[in-house]
Image 1 (tube, rainbow, N blue to C red):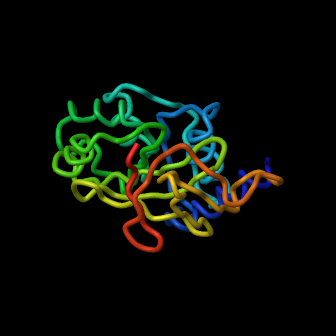
Image 2: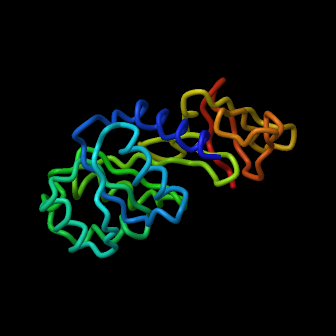
Length: 193
């Protein structure tokens, strides 16, 4: 399990451009797999920094971003929605925002883009499969792109099948998931429930 987590953190850090000196702030605690991976392990393997605090409220997030010169915010849709109450420019130091743990409503993605001039990188995965895919919403049905090393296919009943280096040893490859997808092309897909 540790080898898988560290391996996934290394892939995520490289793919998303986390570099030494970056400062990451997570509103997701490290006892959640997403908080552990993005908020703790990714910065460690990249030689970056992470803040020990996990603020939830918009004002405390903005204050931490400013006080610690945070480059990247690791969050969830509910926390991102609350950031709309902040004045534009309050998150100006951020270079990137990540969201996972639940579907990001299109309205929240659009408001983050227009209000704070920040695209939100959504990460899709599960505790059982690790990270599967990512996207930045650009409108209705923006497709998901698999993370490096991950291969996706559509089962005959429309369910996602994942082949991944992040799966536990002994788990069948590809592994069938319960999520329904529609393939856009060989690699990209749209979630259908």
